[in-house]
Amino acid sequence: MPVSVLKNVTAIAAGMFSGYALRGDGTVWSWGQGGNGELGNGHTAGSAVPVPVSVLHGVFGIASGAGTGYALTR
Image 1 (cartoon, helix red, strand yellow):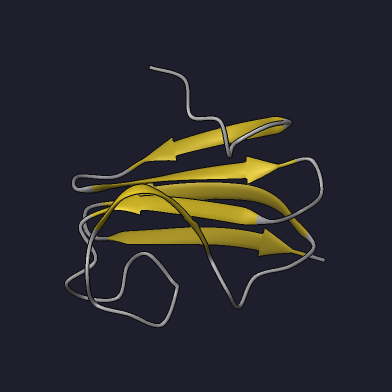
Image 2 (cartoon, one colour; image 1 turned 120 degrees about the horizontal axis):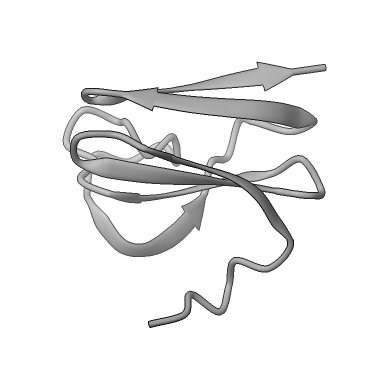
């Protein structure tokens, strides 16, 4: 099923329980389990739909691991 909120995606990273998408405008979106804050939206609840990672802007690279995500910023 297409994720309509995610347009202009330039990179995707998948962790054990979460996923991340980097858009061409330098914003990062996340979804999945968030019990340890791994969605980066200031909450510890999970989300089945992508939510913006609130503290990241100007990102040009992403990666993910088991229970964590990483971003390269300018």
